[in-house]
Structure formats: structure tokens, C-alpha cells
Image (cartoon, rainbow, N blue to C red):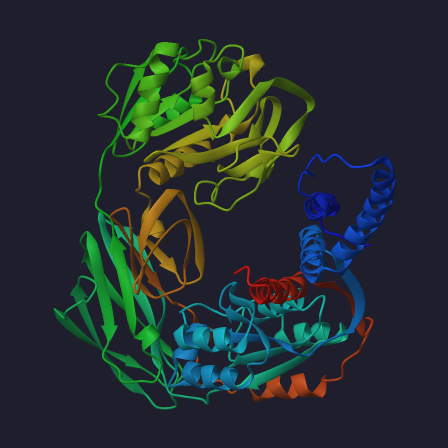
Length: 625
């Protein structure tokens, strides 16, 4: 008998007290009787016992309660059976293109209306943008229709192939169909038709449904910021997708709404581009707006964010004043660095504390000050060394680290470093060129994020949030000379790494980190409240899938579409649809059935409710209720 929890059958022992309860008799009275009557009485008592058992078995209340106990035990044990079920078409995966081009005219609204007509008994919904977003999984028609009322298009580029692959995983057991609703004008990743053919080769039904028609557009398809003579200059590229020349009027203004302060006219030939330059940009948000009434408003605006400069106050604690990390930090622009051999009593004036003890462990009396500093919103960077091994370090300090140190180990042939998580910190670092011959063996803690690790999975760049602050662990010791642990400090990217790290921890960054393109995925140093152009959310990772201005910890980030193909609303996707239909010949390579697990617990519960009602009726019929 297949059971989820066989030990629950021990509950069947409860029938024993039930039987004993029914067989209990009142205590007999003591009477003086003749011997012959006593012998005859024994015979009658023996018959009465058998009659009592017979009465119990025939008592309907006993039978009802016995059956209830048996069913409860079986339900607790989780009885199930398996059966071969045919692949079902009832599960429908709806893939809605939520890219920027779906904002043309009523394309997305039409897609939602079409999707509503494909809703079936069991539904999953995927929004296709730069990455698939599963917004509903295996729910009924009512839940699907409610979700369809709330979905909105973004401003990225759809990876239709990745979304189809996600749909295949959802239908891998039971089968079903995938409905892809898109304008099919542009996409990231593989060819959607190839992905459709692959899904059909596994016995799935895949349908492409096209929405929209070609429309006119003039838009900003690119933009960049340059520092010229100590000031910032912005240049954007405007493209005319129409077949007639256009005199495009541009308006510039300060702030997110960008109320116009200056106007310019730009001649853009049919099907060509022209550039517009805005000089001497001040700190804050500047908006460039095309005064065009076209069918695609997303690329009519461009936002520019220039950050306010703030000096970083850095405390560097070390027992070796010749470390390359100290030299790199001393060269940082807009930074003041102080070097101490021990932790001072007051850390509140520093935006960052770097702990780079070579041999001398952090004093136990200082651990509490470091912890309070970080929990209060400070940032701390620990550089791996022999001073961090467990036998030398205070337990509370080890608990503060995003990794759990084990001990110093050596690798004669050297271990390569591999990037684990994409981040702006490692963006300009060729981690594959780093080789570690000595390292602090450590394991990643639950809740931490590892950016880079050795090829044996030992983390060398990890961080996590402690209170309101961040603790960053750098497992690449920068000791010099014959005892050098690795070659990281010899690489030309080493100073750039420290610049990126300090900017990331301090909430600042270079100008490129304040101006992003839609579809960019970024990890934050800690969990933050994020204000997007349309809503507020909380997290430590953010996909910038809307055009506009995001606010994260007071940092304003301008996000723009900047995609020539996505802005080309004149594209007609008929050729792709023809290819999809031409190859619409499923090649079944899998069985037409699957093994389904059938549970009966819900049915048992229903029977138990009926038995409870029957028990009440029996007791009431006897006049005992």
C-alpha cells in the first residue's frame, strides 16, 4: 500500500480503547444464591458475554465510530495510488509579450483580450520581457482572468525563446499547450520559431498569435554622457522611421516632469538619424522630450541623471602599512583616508571601515563597536588573512562575516577565480586572470551573496546585510613579497576594483551607474526600498524594466529604452508567422501518457463528515441528544 506517512497507521490502535469502552459492564451486586443456581448462572453469564460481543458488533453507533477511526488513520497516513493518465491539453501556458513595442497603439490591450479567450481549466501566465516573469502557475480560469486584468507592459525587450522554455518546464509532466501572443517585431535570445519547433518535438502544442500593425514613429534610440572640461555633456541620437523628412522639436527641462525651459529644432531625414547635444549639465535629473504625437511615446523621452558628489570618509585598520589595498584607497577621488592600528572608540564619522589585519586579530573589546557601527548603517570590508582563522578570532566577529572561516590552506598549482554573480564591482575585473596559491578556506553563510569564488567553490567576494549596514568579505589577501597569497594586487584592474567597491558600498558610483538602459538587472548591497516610475517595492535585486527615474536610497537612476530595433514600429512580422506555420509539424518523441499520483485524502474527509452526521442522527434517535 503506497503511503505518504506509513507511521500514521499507528493511529489504528485507537480502535482498542473503543472496543473496551463498549464492553465495560456495571459492577455486579453480591447475592447469596444456592450452588445449583450459581452453576446455572455461570452458564448464563457465559452466554451473556457472547451476546454482549454480538451486540457490540451489531450496534450501529459502534460500527460508525470504528469506521471513522479507520478512515482517520488512513487519511493521516496519506494513502494514494498511481495511474497512467493521457497527456492533457487542459493546462494552458499564456505567454504575453510585455516589451516596449507592445505599448504601440492598443497592442497590449489586444493581447490581453486574446489571452482571455484562451483561458482553460488550468492556466499559467508568463510575461515575456528581458527575462521570463511567471505571474501565475497552474491556477483556474477565475484566477487567470483576474491576473490578466492587472498585467501591464514594460519597456524592455522580450526574450520569447526563454519564455517558451519556461513554458516547456511547466508542462513537462502533464503536457498541454503554449500560446505566445506578441507583435514579433523584435526579440532577445534565440529565434522564437526554433524554440517553438523544439517544444512541439516534445509533444506540446504551440501557437503564435500576432497582434498589432505597422505604425509611424520618431524616437530617441541612443544616448551617452561625457565629461568635458569638468562638466557633463549629453548627446542623443534621434531616428525618423517615417518615409518623409521631419523637423523634430525637442524640449529640455529640469526634474522628472521636465517642464520645458528650452526648445530646439532638429532636421531628421526619412529613415535616417541626427544627433542632439546638451552641454553643461548640472546635478540632478534632466529630461529631453520630443514634441511628437506618434504611436510610441516610450522613446520620446530621455532622462539624464547627474549625481551629487560627496566625500568618502574611510578608516583603514591594519598592522602592516605597506598593503596595496591602502595605496589604492589613498588614490580614490573625493575620499579621505585615515590609517589606524586598532579600532578607535568612535566610528560614527566614517562612511567605510576596512579591516586588513595581517597577523594581529581584532581585539575582543572592539568587536562590539564594529557590530554597532554596521548595524547603525555603516559599511565594513574584511580582508582575508591569518588573523581571521577561528582559533585567533573572537566568535562574535566570525558571526559578523558573510562567510564562515575554517583555516588557511595552500594550492601549489594555484586556483582560478570564477565570477558567481554579476555586479558592477567585478564589471571591469578580469577575474579569470586571478590565481590564488594560498587562501582562507571558508563556506558561504545562508543569506549572503557571493560575487566571486575559487574554482573549488570557496567564496572570495561575498557580502550580506547586518542591520542597516553591509559587511563585505574580500578573500583575496594582498600581502606582498614571497608570502603573497595571490596575484590580484598585481593586475591593472586592482585599483578599479576598489573604486567600484567603495562607490557601491557608499551609494555613489560613476556616471554610467546612474544612467541605465531598460532590461538591466542589478544587485544591491542590502535590502532597500525601491521607488520605480510606477510603484514602490522592496528587495536587494532590481530589474529596470520601465523607462523613467528610479529612486534607491536617495540615489536617482535614469533608465531609458535606447533600442533601435524595439523603436522600429514599422516592422511587419508576417515573415516570422509564415515560418512558424510552415514548420508547424509536431514530431512526437515522448510517450502519450504519464504516471499520475492520485491522492484520496479529500474523499476520505468527505466520507468522515457524512459519518459524523450519521452518528449525530443515531444518538438523537436514541433520545440521548
